[in-house]
Image (tube, rainbow, N blue to C red):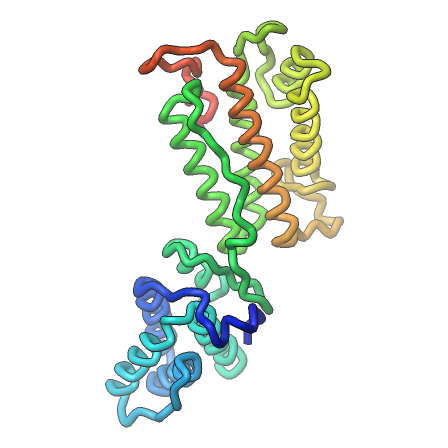
Length: 299
């Protein structure tokens, strides 16, 4: 069983879309196809979904009837997302113990299906968590000083970061966020401010020059915090997501730590985009004041 809000067992937190049911059905068929007794596998999943739907389990008379009865049980369980996800997870977990020779969908596969179909839940054994309480800090990239193509790149990178988190791929998610933070900082290179033109070709040098031009201001402090996070995550004895990791140290990243890093990165990105707009020369509609920022955001 998965742990989640007890009230969800009696009052649905929301329904599962058909696309998720179809994807899980495909998983089930792939598992059954590996077994010499396909009906046994179908019945195994049907038992779990029948319980989730609040109906009695009845053994089907044939494989064809088993498929049809499974579909009916899944459709009835579909109205409660929490119970539906739990039914599939429990069935897979039970099979892993009973039939270790079978290839089974992993948690990352389950979460990927949920993410791709905008179902706001994640399986984090032993918990089923709602993504709503952990809604990422919004990042507005609508500043006119950023080219449309650059904004598309920013949003695509943020979506990749969120998708990787949902799939349980914590370190790659943080790596994606760190790359985007570096890219946003590089957008300041060559920008003319009241304190002078921002020089430097790399993250630390750009930050150093930008900070010198804004001593005593919030921007200087924000850059200091962002640099500390960047340095820690880059270090082999810190986060180890950029320059490799010290394999002698215990650097396992927890999901909670990954979300902390990603949300901190989001907050710095949001602030720096706003500052870039504030410091950029005003442009007339249709012009691009970013000095071809896309070249800095190109991978």
